[in-house]
Length: 101
Image (cartoon, one colour):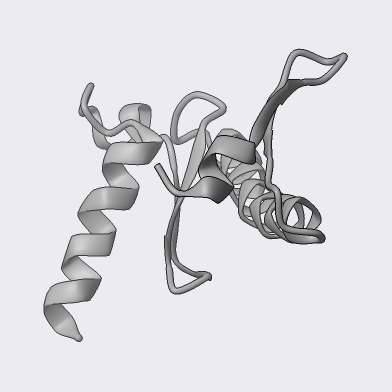
């Protein structure tokens, strides 16, 4: 381990979520802001999928270099494919996008 890793603390919040508190000032807030942005996009995808009737209330994003490159939702009902979970769909679309780039 690096010394910074040994100083990091795992903190459980009142709502049951877990966060890692870094030894570096400001790092935790920056990570939380970044993660919140990405999680918000995944939640938007989940709502979109339910509104469209594509599947259950699940969304996922693929992030590269702090940028959302793919956002997807559950497509099980729309595609009649039991493997078309949000995260699987996001990985599939991310790979297709990567092959095109």
